[in-house]
Image 1 (cartoon, one colour):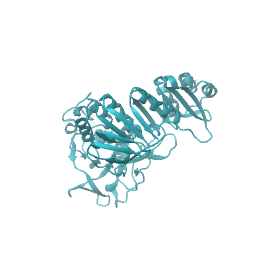
Image 2 (tube, helix red, strand yellow):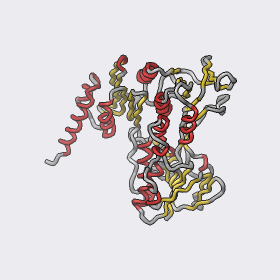
Image 3 (tube, helix red, strand yellow):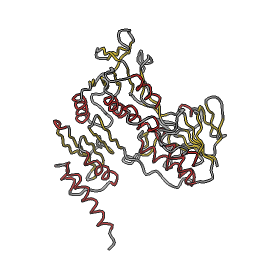
Image 4 (cartoon, one colour):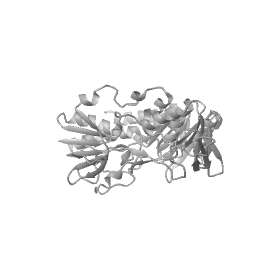
Length: 422
């Protein structure tokens, strides 16, 4: 049996290790697109700051880890997949045959189609190679413009601020991290950054970038501003790496469409991580959930079903985000934006940058978000994942949402009593 994995991020690495755990004799090949060992994108900010060397971003630190598991790392990029002949064609023409395939090819950073976007000193911050370029091109006081204040943008923002650059953030939405915050919470994050000396421009976007000779770059915005920049970093979005699947017959939407067992529309081809449309715990719908914990779980589950057959369904991953923006922790879980016919409880202390929002459907907590209140993170996640009925505690939380820890303990105690043997 030959298992081939396209991709060497958290989904691919965890899948390879579990394939070996479940099958000690199989041949396992993992395609590594970049000319470095498998690494974690979530560790790149630590490299940017200088807290770790490049080796500190590697997913497995022990030398010879994959060789010891008899997992072959092969450097190359897939250019085509033929499920009929069970063959993968690499750039350059080499062909690899497989018995079962896992596509864990991740995502690629995108750039908006604006004039000047390909000039020198404009970088993404998505790969280890990108991070090396940013480190080499910036120093304390460098004028840096960050395009995009979404989740990835704010992770990069944290590292750039720590490097001591003169930072300006440009975000087209009216608030920061709009996919995990409402207007109140997103505006509070913006105000926090401004108080930390970071310039933040919202409700506008870059219209063009020029190299006029006076400064390395001039960035123009739609509202008429012209900003000098030594470096521009683009964090405006990513897309799943699926182009090489064109013509394969494998169904692709925003990512690879998978079933409850992480199998694609084609037999013996599975998908995991940022390239897969996996099940959402709250809604039961399938979409790309590009966070590392989901990728890890996808990889393990796909490996199980590749070896043992389609026996372990995917229960769904909770939509969750935890973000540190220059020392201010924000979180969102589940249906944080609310549901039709639901109710909302909100607590806001704008001056002290504290915020809590709970979303209910009947007496069940279905979503939550918080800012500067880390003590509630675990209980919010737990209540949403279990779908516990809160009963009388629903009314109490509507009046005092910060009593959520008490509600969680009461719910856990009620569940214990209900399941205790008579």
